[in-house]
Length: 196
Image 1 (cartoon, one colour):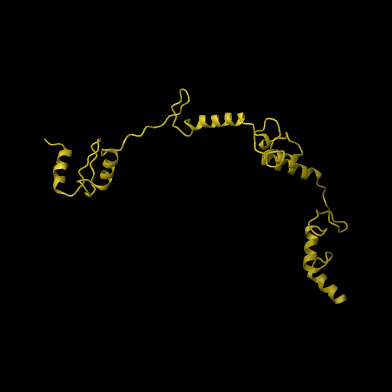
Image 2 (cartoon, helix red, strand yellow):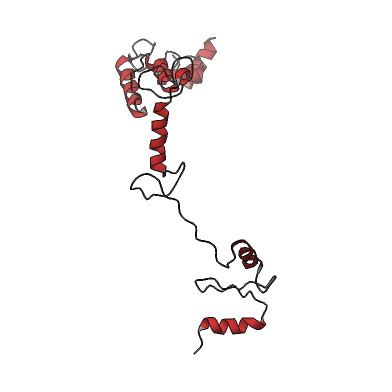
């Protein structure tokens, strides 16, 4: 009994298909270009003297007992970051380093990095830690409601809350409709026009 591969090879001898077979038994079905093989396998044979691609060795991290994939400078991503941090701490920045103790960030102006500049601008203090946006909003809202004094309508004997132009919502609507906050209906408005 012939194997499937042998049968395929016999049928391919007459046809114009590539004769290259790779190591895993992979048969190429491309059209013949030159020397009985397709363009891809011809170029591969010229370069590597084989129809198979050479096995690429996966570079490993050179750190002891680390088998992670190589990233840069012969280290994996994790150990490369550690390498960078130790390297940066050894380098003396001089004029480029932020003047605050234990801060390795780059200066933005003559003295401080962008983080410490922002702290100075907002809190007038270098050691204040940044608060989350929610906490800031809550504090502002509490301060607003504590300091807020209830404004009252300027109309005598009206204790409603101020809305606009010193008037409450009701009197503001009268003013907007009839031009005077004392006029509350169309009847009054027409009577005032007759008097004038």
